[in-house]
Structure formats: structure tokens, C-alpha cells
Image (cartoon, rainbow, N blue to C red; front, top):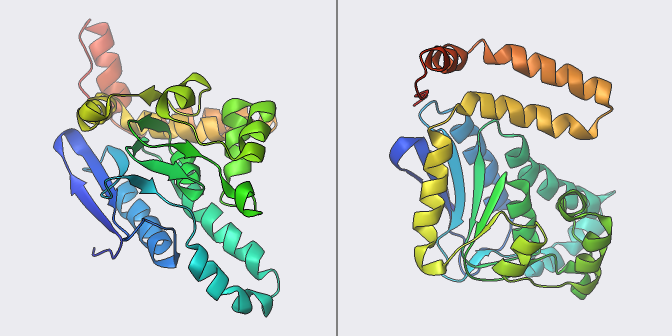
Length: 262
């Protein structure tokens, strides 16, 4: 499948790199969101893809926020449509949330600025590894607020008080501080960035990725009432036995061997 704003590169051990390439600054627009959603479907349904890495071809920017010029230009269209701006926000939310629910491990490889919407896409991923650049939700400095899931996900990651501080001050964090507060998982040397991301992605790829995807489904249900969450967990547990992974893992366990899932 051809994409206008992304490139997909399949690498060793079933790791697929989704490279964002939307010049000049990787701004979020309808074309990019269409491509991201189509790519999510393709990668989830590809049996050869075990882990997904979202990265950027821009040397300094992981992903910028929404295309503000386009937003202003389209404001007249929104004015004539009931709840038009709200629908635009929900469009971005749904696009990024697709990666939160994609039942394979998803890594945000951040080696450039991830501000506003860029931070929101990164937070929708399962893991965030960061080298250079800054990360943060900067929308309030423009008189708006994070509208692509940022208020919800940041609160879950760092807690209410810290989320309010970061959103109200529009603070931009470098990798070390972002790691300290739990916004990202790893802060790595930019010179070894791709190597570090690759090693972690391949480590995951060698594991039971179908079980990981089902575990992700269950973890995503943790915000529901516990009775509902436990029901989803039990169903996901049962679904693991529809794959070959329990046979591989349990056989290796009883033989005192390391399980080879790939």
C-alpha cells in the first residue's frame, strides 16, 4: 500500500518501522491521520510484523502539533457545522487511540521535538524511547488545550497534579526530566538512538507477542469497573490458547529450555 506521509520499513525479527515524513515540519493534518490509520490496519493484520516502531524522518522533529494554518483556514467550515471543532478534536483522538488499542507492541522512537500533538501520539504508544529534542503539551500557550487525548493520557501517566502543572505551564521537557517523571521509559544517547530502539524492539519481538497484544487489551480495561476488567482479562487469557504460544512456552518450561516464539 502506498502512503503520502509515511514510509514503512520491515527489519529483522518482525520489527516494522513506521517513519513519519510530512514536510516541512511533520505537522498533523488529515492526510497524515488517514495514513496513520491505514498503516495501523496493515501492520496489525500482517502476520510477519511483531513489533511496530513509530519514528520520524525529520532530523529535528518527531511530530509537530496540528497544522495551525490549516486549522485557521478551515475555521469558517467549522463555524457552519454543528460541533465542527469538537469533531476535529475527536478525529485526532480516534487516530492516535488506534495505536493504544493495536494488539501488538508499539514503540515511539522520539529523536526530535514531540510537542503538542506529537507528545499525544507518543503517549498513545506502549513505550517511549527518547534521545534528543523536547517533549510536552504546549497547547495552553496558544490559548487552546490538548485535544488529541493528552489531558487523559498524561494524567494516567504522571498523576493529576503533575499533569496540571505540565499542561498549565506548557513546559517542554528534555529526555532526562521526562524519564524522571515517568513520561518516557528510556532516555538514551542520541548517538546510539537507533541501536537502542532496535535492541529493545527486537527483545520484545522475540517474546510471545500475541500474548502481549491480548495483555494490552486487558490492561486497557483497567479503567473500567473491576468486574468488567476481570471479565475482559479472563476472555483474553482464554484467547491465548487459540494461538500456538502456550504450547511453545509451556513445552519450553517443562523441558527447562528458553521459549522460542519467533
